[in-house]
Image (cartoon, rainbow, N blue to C red; front, top):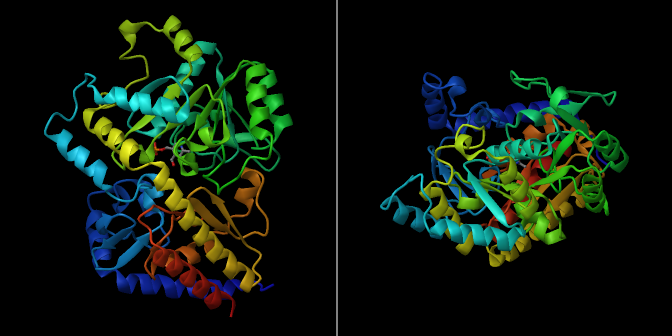
Length: 451
Ligand SMILES: Cc1ncc(COP(=O)(O)O)c(C=O)c1O
């Protein structure tokens, strides 16, 4: 088994950074200009979190590919960190958006298409009632409010190292002694999350029961398989226990399918027969146009109606003027009907199998103590020999330098992975040649590092 030479890794990182600089002069110039009008030179801070010292400025994106302002072409395995999982600008969504643009963009009134979307969401996810927002973050924030309002309970429960968007209650982790603390770099929390939230490790049933037993938890907010600290699959029987315990202690179960929609047309929920009280999802639902939804059961609907004062519905903390706007609805309807179909997943899964087989073959060839993990059309490589069971184990295994090196090496050779834990998403527009290109580049990166 080869050992990692940190000095060599550092030297390679430097030479890759120089190569990146040489190949992106226009992006660099735009970045310098952008820094004069935008904090950090980017419209949103996380856009600077790439392995190069400045972001690539995109010229055009279509399907699974994009080009940058310097004329470099890329296979996009990041796909907007799921926002463009459909492939960039899918034809049906684009046509629907262009048609709707002529007929009203935001109305503050429903129109008929929205019913088709509600019915399709019912069919896919099995929950009867749906509401619309612009982001998955908002969907999560709103269902937490609903759950607290209905149950009269103050707390929520999340899993260690989860991410559900910028939801205040979720920025909490366990420290080395197992104590809950505000997540490092949690920016200006309005309230200490240890007052609002319990946090336990994923896959730890006794810890879950202990946390719910006190009877003050309104809802568990969970990804059905964790994806934001790397992919962590639930142990066999874990979901059954999660459902039984939440029911036993009168706690609602919220399943956040924003990333796990990579599992199939009805997400992990449909694929594994889960029975959440609430389900939230955003990102790719409208082909990249801002749109998100949350669904809930008959029981939730009835209890919510009983405590809701409609006169204050617009200022009660759940809302958004542009939520459910006509443009998002049109894009969502077209995307659900024509893009995120069973055929989409069949093709993407086939390609993802090829992708993981390629990475695995290199890991075996060089006897690396690494693994590749997969969930539907999403996969990532991990620099540890076995899969982590929970967020704490996964976080401890992160190797930032190795992550940066693999990411930058790939980027310099026309492959964009997500900057966090080298995640690769596959859209049906990705080709076998794209996947094989990745395998070759992955192999070359390994050779440069170990030989
Ligand atoms: C599981 C999950 N839920 C919610 C969100 C929030 O999505 P958005 O940033 O689009 O609001 C994310 C973002 O990465 C996510 O991974």
